[in-house]
Image (cartoon, rainbow, N blue to C red; front, side, top):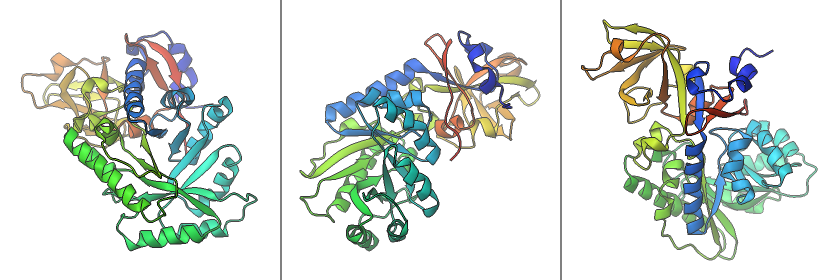
Length: 390
């Protein structure tokens, strides 16, 4: 028996309006998702480059199938072992061939990765010589080396090695001497692109990504075929600006994960518009406080997260952007406004449903056990159950 109402009863809401959903609920607009995916696929196709979607945002077979264009693209990135297990049915369907595990590899994950390797081609992320040693020492029945991507830090300082670091030279040399690994290419993720506030900034960050992986690739012979993988959702949105000429031995691929959903962080970068957001949280007004001009909703930190964006607070009411989620506790959210002419007792009533745009779709989605999929009329047409855990 599960304790989550939607996980037990979501099929009962098919055909209903979002106004009839339990609250809080996570809603995904399928027409907007399809439009967002089609736009990025077209950009990738026009450039003639590869594409590897990241499955970490909505974590379902349905969205992954759409991002892969039902087999036109055949590789994914995953952040967790649970996500890799989740995509395995797509291998059986014949639409997926390989998965890159994006966390720099650590010993505790190797037994599971070795088992998963029997079902899908697994690629590993590496950014430290000690990881090569771990792979050298790991007992395996396979005679095939692990294909690895070396993570390059182009400014985010989350994971990776800077392209001009002597540590990178040493790592490449150690990997080349190892019988346990084969360098498939170099990978970077410009997470700091989320702080950009214009398309021009995103374009500059994209160029930094390309430069970083190309500098790293020069540590190997020019006759060696290599993949270089770049991307984050903000830089993916401006990938059509790419004009770099690549060496003959280099194949370029783009990776991105948030782009089907989008959120206020993406809107803040000015590379998409408000109408490109496909996800919302449906909450309910629990109380109204005229004395302080605020209202209480049943969506707090757990439902919305504390991530921020260029917009005030932790999200805002769809259609009433002057009303922001100004404070949060675990399950309580407070709606407030800086507009003196807008009053809470006129705007809201107890029991009223409100839709909220969220700051960071990946974190917000992780709170929910079911995603309610709606059409252009906000009618529920499907329910997706995401993969959970690590």
